[in-house]
Amino acid sequence: MAIADTTAAVDELYDYCLATARRAQAASAELAVVPGAVKNAWLRRSAGVLRERYEEIQRANALDIAAAPSYGLTPAAIDRLKLTPKTVDGMARALEEVAALQDPIGETIEGSVRPNGLDIRKIRVPLGVVFFIYESRPNVTVDAAAICVKSGNAVILRGGKEALHSNKLLAEILAATALECGIPADAVQLVNTTDRGAVGHFLKLDQYISVAIPRGGESLIRRVADEARMPVIKHFDGNCHVYVDAAADLAMATAITVNSKCHRLGVCNAAESLLVHQAVAAEFLPQVAAALTAQGIELRGCPATRRFVPSAKEATEADFGAEYLGPIISIKVVDSVLQAIEHINRYGSHHTDSIVTGDLDAAREFTARVDSAAVMVNASTRFNDGGEFGLGAEIGISTDKFHARGPCGLKELTSYKYVVYGTGQTRQ
Image 1 (cartoon, rainbow, N blue to C red):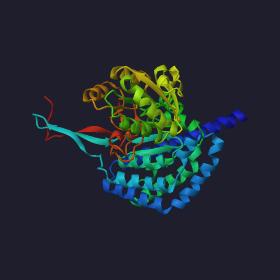
Image 2 (image 1 turned 90 degrees about the vertical axis):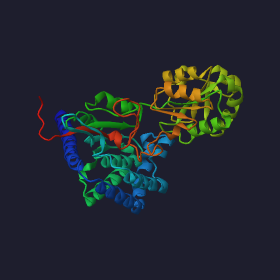
Image 3 (image 1 turned 45 degrees about the vertical axis):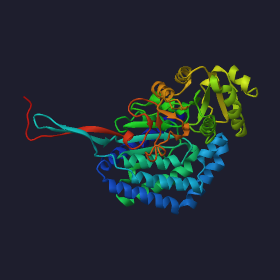
Image 4 (image 1 turned 135 degrees about the vertical axis):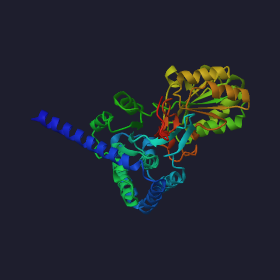
């Protein structure tokens, strides 16, 4: 009897996932022809409702915060979960910023007229249905819905159990305002079960779902990459580097290092590793060590680093490849910009890496040879972000090279088709 009950439960869960995916596909077909003005009206209306219902959102979020310790969430993870007046207003402003962006759908990417008179146009179109899996941060619910719908895609949102109350209310608001503004309500759907088996079912529904995008811990992302039958836009981790070159302005280098590491510890574009050219190590390392230590950061360094900063702990091989997502940074002294590049390409995650230098040739060498989605020159790694890049809200950052790389904004959630206009031509 127990086996039969289990089988029935699995079948029921599959049927729920299948029905959700089918509704999303139907909504995506309608959404593909919704005018940009309608989508923008929905975004602005949703922004207004978020502000109007802030107290209700805060009450839902408080339930998630209260339950967070029982899920074993770290302080950094609880910080990502929390919805303050500032973050709710930030969500609303993100919707308004997306509304202000140009609608990519229908854009002619390129075109030509052939000698036989055929007018051939490459037109931007939506991907279709996005299955978005994410953890903790409920503000991502709003960002993802905004960027998917604006780019003409329906979205199935599968948030973590730790943000269930917040996500449920936010998704209800977005679906209600969609219907009010003339957008299919099923364009935004939240998976209403925390059963992990649902993810496996959705990842097999490639006949309805166009792309999967996981955003969370490495184990989640690897599971999605392993099980998905549809393409996956992803990055596994964020071991980001700051390299301080021989020609660096050391005050600037200290400010960039501290911001890259300390601005927010638990995010994928936070610096986890610091590389320092030997020519400036003696002067730079003590001052940056003092600045980082003042922020509560534990230093783990190579032998050369520890000669200049005796308080630093010994770094292991594992430290150089680690994504700490917390108050630890690895430090290595290097002989040259090429050695820094080799270290980054070996231990890094191809996410975000920065060089601090006044040497244009060193900067060119670094940007050409570092194989990462974003390479910064004299700027913090924390700028690798859709909003900071002017893309509006992002749905994630990709370290892949197909089909999107870096922050994924509106255009990264589109494909294209060729539309050919003739006047009766036939092929000879």
